[in-house]
Amino acid sequence: MTDPGAYPAGHAEEFFDRAPCGLLTATWDRRIIAVNRTLVDWMGSAPDDLVGRTFTELFSVGGRIHYETHFAPLLKINGRISELAVDLVAPDGTRLPVLVSANLDGSVDDSQPLIRMALHDARGRRSYERELREERRRAEAGWARAEELAATLQRSLLPPSVSAPAGVDAAAHYHAAADDVTGDFYDLYPLAADLYGFFMGDVVDKGASAAMLTSSTRYTLRAAAVVDDDPGLVLHTLNTVLLQQAIDEGFVLTTVIVGTLQLTDEGVEVRLASGGHPPALLMHADGRVSEVDTRGGQAVGITANASFVETRFVLGPGDTLLLYTDGLTEARTGRGPSRFDDDGGLLRFVGEHAPASAHEIIAALTDLLSRLGAYVEDDVALLAFGVPALRR
Image (cartoon, rainbow, N blue to C red; front, side, top):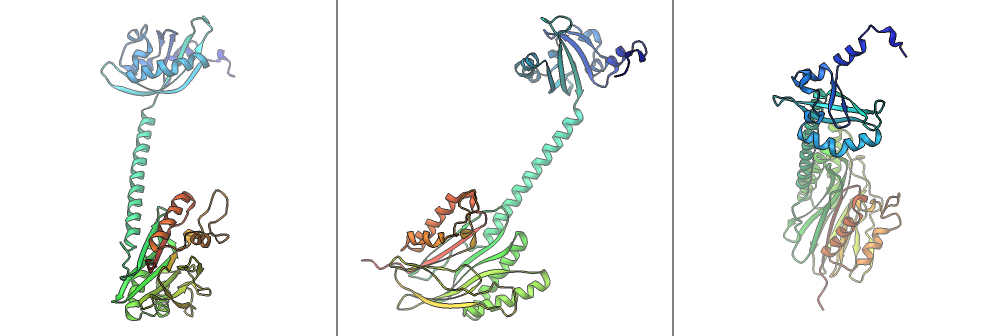
């Protein structure tokens, strides 16, 4: 600690008067008994104009209320306060934001301690805080616009409604779990008077690149099905397109189920081919549920010699086919690592609702996703279609 005798006479008084912050001493009843030149200059007053006044008179109305209701009690209890933000108001109405720190000095009279107060010019800090708030406002507005754009873009990648042939019940649902654009997609659309095409897929990507890949994939699937409705050939066409696209844009990958619905006297004949997508579930009219065996199909876009699995079957009255993306099966069931389909949860859930129409099973799964809430960490696409049960 420096020896006070090392300073010239009057140094303490000069430091008080010329300190880079406003300084004052007041009695407990707020009456100013000493004030430094810095504070006098800030207020545009003479020292005699301030001595004898209460220091709260220098504050804005809001500052006075805040001091009396919050900070004066704290000062009395703790003996000090730090960085109270108030505005000083000069006689001409000019406002100066300051940060006030104070402590109690009971060395003169413990029953009436002195208040020693330092007031720091906060104009730079206030300006910085305003800039931060404005930047945050702009950032939040930007995030909101980005989220709106992502939602709009995501909706544009999905059909406004599925178009089912007469006599077929069809329903779909898209559950958005993330703010970013993801690559889940589906469609059900006419190819001829009695022939309809459908597909369900999931691009392994997110954001703008996922949107571009999803758009080109949907276009390719529809166009290829118009040229040749064979589901296996449609997948091979998509595979060729994605491999060519990968040359220009890098590795691309998607899982897809593609197929057709053909109206027959027995019901609806389904032909489908799978490229690495989770197996569709067939809900039978008698309440049984089974997976459509498409094991062995490879994801699309990996290799030129891709192997896809094809099958066909007939949906009779009361039968319903369900397609989904893996956001459903990989949804967590709670805070732990357990996933919804770790032990066959999806097959069991669908079995509890079978038999069911397309609208009924989509409604049940939509409710499930709502109940799982934030535990659904990836987007989910659902598509179901079937033949209504015969009326008895």
